[in-house]
Length: 276
Image 1 (tube, helix red, strand yellow):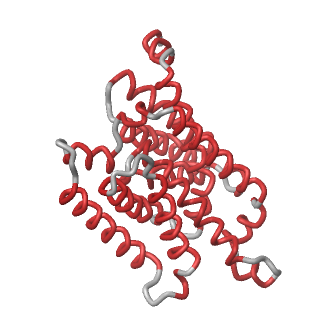
Image 2 (spheres, one colour):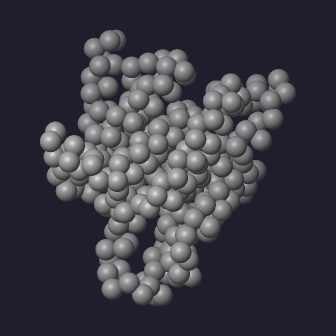
Image 3 (tube, one colour):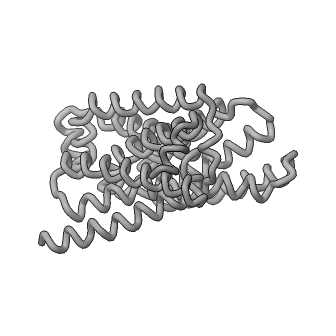
């Protein structure tokens, strides 16, 4: 505990903890919706698209890669969620093709045009996460905070509509709900969350932030609201615990957070079994 308090005295550690908690909280909000709509794998697909966009930004030597990564990821999310049902290639096939294609082209670009002397380290850090979240600047923290607040406000304002679209999209459309617009809204929010989460857990581990909290909460609770609240608490706790453990033990931040998610999922499964 004394070591943790000492580390938290450094501003960059506090920045990392704040951003990590915000990202985990935002990721959990739409996790329940994605799991129930059987679209949980979209997080993995979009993270690979973000990796490809990040490779393009690094080749162009942009000082702020958000200008390319965020629009490209949002566009991919819109294509997959909003227009995927009417496309010739549907569902998981479209996600898989977009995912592996973006990952391959991203690595090719980084391999061919990278000026870094440690290409393998850069790729590994981007894919799996590292201690890079500890190098966030104050401006990046402010940007993450603003985007996280926007995500939370939008989710709260349109909670009832998101609930309706999640459980019965056909009935919601019949009652006058603009399901296409809300699917588009969900797609944009997911893309923003994915881009934010890349700093925390890397491209390959982002799905864990979306799936584990929702699936764990569903083992114990049954109502949509209870599962959403439990998922948020679960995600924030695991992110905070994982980051503190990684700081003290020197382990990769993303992998440690996901390991905490997996352990807590097992705990929730046991609690759910006992309650039944």
